[in-house]
Amino acid sequence: MLKTFKKKFVGDRKFYGMVLAIAVPIMIQNGITNFVSMLDNIMVGQIGTEQMSGVAIVNQLLFVYNLCIFGGLAGAGIFTAQYFGQKDDEGIRHTFRFKIWMAVLLTVVTVLLFLGIGETLIQYYLSGSSDGGNLQATLRYGKEYLLVMLLGLPAFMMVQVYASTLRECGETVVPMKAGVTAVLVNLVVNYLLIYGKFGLPALGVVGAALATVISRYVEAAIVLIWTHTHKEQNSYIVGIYKTLKVPLVLVKKFIIKGSPLLFNEALWAAAMAVLTQCYSVRGLSVVAGLNIANTLNNVFNVVFIALGDSVAIIVGQLLGAGKMKEARDTDNKMIAFSVFCCTMMAALMLLISPLFPRIYNTTEEVRVLASRFIMVQAIFMPQNAFLHAAYFTLRSGGKTIVTFFFDSVFVWCVSVPIAYILSRYTNMYVVYILAIVQIGDWIKCLIGFILVKKGVWLQNIVVKS
Image (cartoon, rainbow, N blue to C red; front, side, top):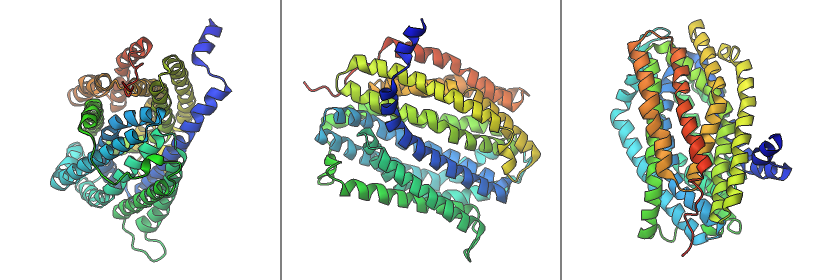
């Protein structure tokens, strides 16, 4: 039995070398990005609870945009990975141009939305008690931060278009280097502008936003310049802007496959925002505590996020090449590897949970809440690793309708109602509510296990007739 288990779920040294070659650069990029975001969060947290909470609320709202971009590009990205597996440069050009159009549309809509009702959206998170801070001050800081952050959306958009294409074609190192450079710039400028060092003005939350915007343009410059100056490695980039036309037949294919992903990411991110709003009715201290916990959680989550991305890339390329048996075997081993790695990360996170909140300049109540939130997130990390890998397995084979129901429909039909009812109609401790929402995902784990095991995702969606 042990031998069968090892054969099915454990790879050899060559296998893990291949996986880590893809995953580690993504892990490093996302890890450093989230680590510096954590330092950014700590710096803002040193100013006060209101500033930290205002920034956290806006970042939760911008997270919806970020995932809309991710989902909007992901549909075409499925085709990019499989076109690359077939060495079809023209196909990659078409997916790239489609991504440009999609990213511009989503960014314009987002900017108009936030300029119109940004303040109203922030106020939804300030409907609870003011324990631990001043609600009006929190609103003011949130508005200031949001207006500056909007200036960075065009750069973020272009980075996602280029970096996603590079990754889908197997180039993960350059986006990693660009991301590392950007976060270091962000960290330095944060220090200078938040606190007003070396004669510069102390801008507080506005300084934090300016630092993020500057770093995004630095990242965009690096990725775009490298891509266009290394045409031998990126042969698809030759003539990429000779036209922005995409054949209608392909637009239909991209939309059919991509629309469920876009709606999925948008609805899932919106659900996360609603879940946070549900918890926020218990008071500003809960908003602050969740912000601290999520900041640390994001750093640890890079492991299963990078391994999930790797599933999409590696398995997608195998499917594009018609290697179905190898794709299944590789997927089994990658899911097992992700769960194992995240079990180790969860243990480390549990050890850190009592210590991390003490870095922040906030109340003892906020620190206790943050510590307990971190414990809950750590306990359920292996479960989330499995769900993430299962999601990308289904997506790699173009099963976007399935992933739509698996991901966002589930969270709206199960997770959100649980949080909404328990937060508003019971006196249950908010930490227990968070844990029960996670327990609800056991149903999703069972569904994911069945779908992956059945192999409904084993298909080549770019096969030539």
